[in-house]
Length: 216
Length: 216
DNA sequence: TAAGTAACATACCAACCGGTATGCATGTGG
DNA sequence: CCACATGCATACCGGTTGGTATGTTACTTA
Image 1 (cartoon, each protein chain N blue to C red):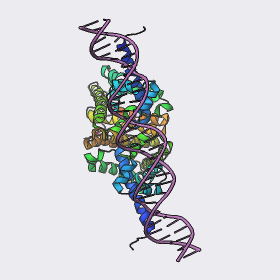
Image 2 (image 1 turned 135 degrees about the vertical axis):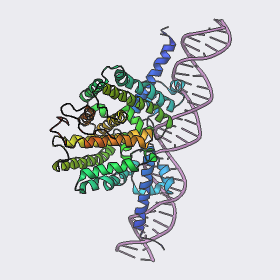
Image 3 (image 1 turned 90 degrees about the vertical axis):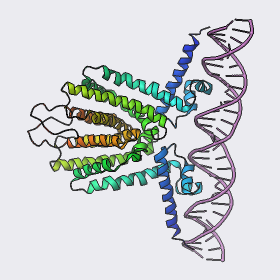
Image 4 (image 1 turned 45 degrees about the vertical axis):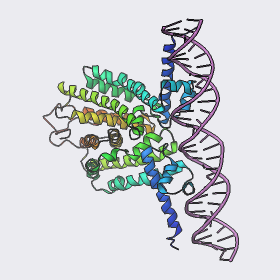
């Protein structure tokens, strides 16, 4: 009768499960996430879920790879990779986050950070998949800093690997604190300091060389 | 016969439950922590547990208040409060953590950070109790910075509240990243950058005034 | 058109969960 | 010495968990 190709239909229900699972995991964490809840919110049943995913863990990993990771790639990583002046792109993105995110955005915290804290010491597969995202984030940030060095916007003595690692870590730290306080003001204050840190990597303009700066 | 005062005995079993619960929660998180596991590791039974604690949540809150919080107070907060030069005390403590912590210390992550990420959006009581620790940590750090200002070791234009907030946030962020990588090297690299941030709050020695520095 | 498979729904399962009600010692105050 | 409370142990409970086995329907392919 209707049949917009049943193959496309199947992919659609898979996507529905994936999104519902992502939402439930975001709210409850992975371990506390209930398959029954996920199915109830979609109107589907266990037959559908276990047809598309072999286990709860596989579903969780699919959420990590296809929802969390994809979101990061689209919003931050790809723009940073393609940018001519990635340093500006990074700072601009931080500004947007500082400006746009409201209180309720921090009620549930950063999906990536939540999963990292919960799962990385509990399940090795999760740890690996999550680490791929963090590694990509860190690598892209490091490349942005290195490109910044070649453009004389970042001091040559800056350890770009360590700085990128710190930026990612502190960023997630800001999310965590804002989540506990459930306040956008906390996030803004915190991220503004991180922005300041990034700016402190720039060469000193006016006088001659000052400070040995970043470690070693 | 023996009876080293049964009242003291009762407090001892309470403490045993508390410590076992803290360990289990540290490994599995609070929600995934199994009361059966906790009791098995102590050799006690449910009768004992529910005699001393009315519920699992109450047990968790007791762990937060009497184990996690106490540990923080003793190791970091009290020394910082009593220090004449709190800035040096803070930096020295960071150095010790950078030096002494080994890989296996990051297998389970920071107990405080773990609970914050897991519980603050799930249970309001937890959020409040955890926030008390974070607030105390931030306040002590802020006071250290303010005292540093009065000693001309911190620039006058530094926003000590924001800086303290960021230090705490980034600190936990370093823990989180090190937990995911399960590597002390990650923690060292990351904390060294945070240390650098703290140092960047110091007045510029050689030349005249440089940079507007910290926000607003 | 017959056989087969993809895409689900339904019913069921053992295991585990936190919590409770009861039993039973061991002191302890009157 | 007795009533009573403290400090546990034992047994049990309903509810929920992830997972599975068995339909049933619709569509594809030969």
